Every structure is written in structure tokens, then in C-alpha cells.
Length: 381
Ligand SMILES: Cc1cc2nc3c(=O)[nH]c(=O)nc-3n(C[C@H](O)[C@H](O)[C@H](O)COP(=O)(O)O)c2cc1C
Image (cartoon, protein in one colour):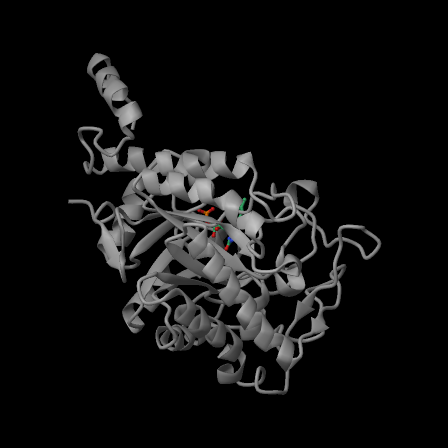
């Protein structure tokens, strides 16, 4: 019996398996509106039968986009364009999810395949960026406007409006993007948040805005919808956010309507990054990127809090994913680059793990033919 392919229910939603398509920016939207590329991209993962297919970081307002080509969900046109995508994912028996995001001080950049640099002020597509403090991410990044308390409170409502639109668009799970140096994370980390009011200072104050957003979004979406929160479990910078802080945050998130903590790491600073091991020693870049390098973060959330956890980061092999799920290190296993490389990864993993010996997981349009093909010669997994 495969743990990876055992369904899991969170609130009112049953996920058919634990494989998750991690949010993956495609930098292919127009004015925040999904294009045929988004349908092709996300529907492929649904044909591949991932239990939960997350749409990429989707901005709650225009200045919250990472690039001018990022998805948004601040108007009705954007909602309408997402509806066929969620309908198709649903039709395949998978759960459509959306990651709601605000890029904060890391907004207004060019897509990675066009350089990934902050847009210069004279670029017609650039916009002023915002953050908890007037601290730039690093050299070449613009100095953000320090949000006022009224602006912070208004942003909570902006997240709420985006969450309501997400439901209208057909999404059945929502993730709040609290990682990678974007707005919510930048409030949490002492590297980027140096406010001296109620939204900065000690960890309680730095958590206030992300917790207010979580609580308000939960109140807006009702009790049935699963809410995920992606964290950068560690900043990996001296004086930054630590795994102990993440446990504190997770316990607070549990009190504020979040169900699952998705454990990523890093991204708060544009300065060279290094990560720390459990003893606080810097990891080299190569050791930090070994398979499953972020799984221990998810494991601590599972063991030390009431919340479910999601592991992500260089998870490649079906056996590796199965081990994470069966050992209880994480409840969900998310894939990014590997599932782009092989969008039918879940179908093949289910066969490798003997969870689908008869091709029953396959879409009916493929099953009858692939099944017959298998009788002629063995199929690769
Ligand atoms: C092309 C690309 C786009 C990404 N976009 C997002 C995103 O929108 N939101 C997010 O939280 N992480 C994003 N990430 C990070 C992935 O979700 C994932 O955490 C990371 O790639 C590690 O998983 P992997 O080793 O399986 O790729 C992106 C990564 C890639 C490669």
C-alpha cells in the first residue's frame, strides 16, 4: 500500500494522492490574465494526475507581481481566464489550487529568461515597490516604500478579495505565499523588517501581518477550504529567520485558520546566500541542494505542531517521495522542476510503487490504448 497514493482529506476537500505540483511562475500572462500557455501547462499536470495542482504565484494586486508577465487575480477578466483551467483540473479528479502572492520589495523585475533583474526606473513597465521597511533587497534593487499601518490593513483586504475571486474562479485550495523574500516573508524576517511599530520588532510583531492575512482569508473562504501557507523555513543568513521561528509561526498559523505549512527556504536577501545546518554551521551550496534538502523542515513542522506539512525541493524519485510520505516526514510531497521535466510523473510513480498496476489512474482517453500497448511490450515506468 503506497502512502504517496493514499488519499488525504483536509477540511472539506479530499486529495486523491499526496503528489503536489509546486507553484511554478511561467512569466507568460498578459496584464495578469492567463493565456493558452497556462491552460496547456497546468492541464498537463492534471492529465498526469497530481493530487493537487497549484497555479503559480498569482498577484493580489498589480504591484504585487514579480514581473509584468506574472498572473494576477485582482479583476474579473483574470478570474474568467482561470475558470477553464480549474474546470479541467477538476474534471481529471485532481484538486485545483492557487498560490496568492504579493512580491513586495522583490516586485518589478524581468522574467528569468530575460535576465531576472529589477526593472530600471526608466523602464515603462516598472513600478514602485513596497515593503515593511525602506530597505532594498540588495544592489540594483529599488528601495521600497515603507508601508503605513493603514496601507498594511488595506492589503489584508486585498488578499481577502483575491481569495474570494479564487473561489469564484473554481480553486478548491489556496496557498498564501509567505516565502522567498516576498511581501509576507519580508514582514517575518528581521533582515527585511526593521519597523518599530506594532508590525515590527519582536517575532510576535513581525508575525502580525501574515497572521492577520491568514485569519482574514480563513474568515472569507469559510470552513471547508484547505489553506496552505508557504514559508521560508530558514533565511540561511546570520541574524535571519530560523527553524525555531518557523515552529513558532506554524503554531500561530494553526490558530489563524491555516491547515498545511509548505516548507521552502531562503530568498530574503539579494546578497550571496548560504544556509545553516541544524548546528548553525553554513552549508555549502552543493550540500544545501542535495535531494530532499528541505524535507527536515517539513518534518519538524509535522512533529512539533498540529499542522500538516508539505515537503519540496529536489524530490525526484518515486521511492524518495514514498519514503517522505510513509515515514510521516510530510503529508504532501511537492515537485517543481522534476514534474516540469516529466508531467506524467505521478502516473509513472504509481506504477513504480505498485499503486496502479492496471493503468486505472490514467485518463480514460489514454488508459485503453496504453493498456493494450503494454500487452505488446513492457512499458517503461
Ligand atoms: C520555473 C520555476 C518557477 C517557480 N515559481 C514559483 C512560484 O510561483 N511560487 C513559489 O512559491 N515557488 C516557485 N518556485 C519554486 C518551486 O515551487 C519549488 O519550491 C522549487 O523549484 C524547488 O522544488 P524542485 O526542486 O522540485 O524544483 C519556482 C521554481 C521554478 C523552477
